[in-house]
Length: 366
Image 1 (tube, rainbow, N blue to C red):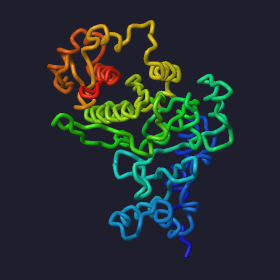
Image 2 (image 1 turned 180 degrees about the vertical axis):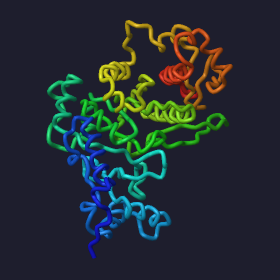
Image 3 (image 1 turned 90 degrees about the vertical axis):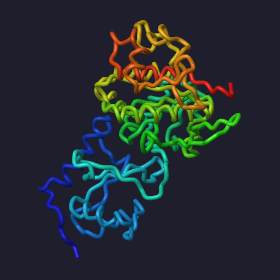
Image 4 (image 1 turned 90 degrees about the horizontal axis):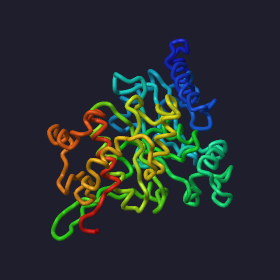
């Protein structure tokens, strides 16, 4: 039996469709059709169709405890945009409701898909930008028309950016920067407990789904969110250090991209200040390149030099070989006394962690 559950004039569906279209328009993509699909295809017809895609696409079963609660939400609002990987598999669903009352939209992943990255479709125009941006020689140039990610291993001259969020990865790709998205900042890494000389330690390694794209020798740039909340900032910093360590253990050339606190995500940075993005991306791509302006990194180098390092075995930042407690205000003040007049404490912590990671070492292996 057909039933009209939601009146288009109510705006639940039309507003969501426009929201998605506006997000893609900011990426200079006229239509989202090449990057995903809306579900259900006809939200005003059959209620069964609306719920069915939860089972067929997201692989949720009607016996799941959370199924009825979620399906009731779809009966009421009934709209989602599915982000598709370049091979047309589903990465994630953007839905027009959220469990967090402070948000209007939420994200749902297919059940039992595991910790897999998002491989956004890469258009021919984006490939042209890549060839130009990285000045690739004829033998290294990105080919048009085929599956970009299937051949990514061949493009050894290209760097790779790891971020979190489908829109962020798409935004980078639109700028001619190869990028894939993790489900969250702590994804893509697995922990291994190791014992050396009777002492237990922890090592981090890339998951297999990520490893083949982060081959030894490739420059891999970490571009996670620049959150303002201290607790979230610490969480991201810890996840960032684990990912950096895993990349280094895979013999990649990792670096961390940072930017102004005015922008949370790398997509916000690109849309809000493209020139600042280009500068920060260049710094991350060529971390050895010196700026004519004295940066925070250079101040740390001048004041502390080789005294700050990152211990890969203990997964801790060290000053003079001793664990540096960056959460302790007194320790932080002692460490950054000469820098405090130039930058705020939060930015200094980020800079110290980033600098330490670039000078990481393993006390047993080295």
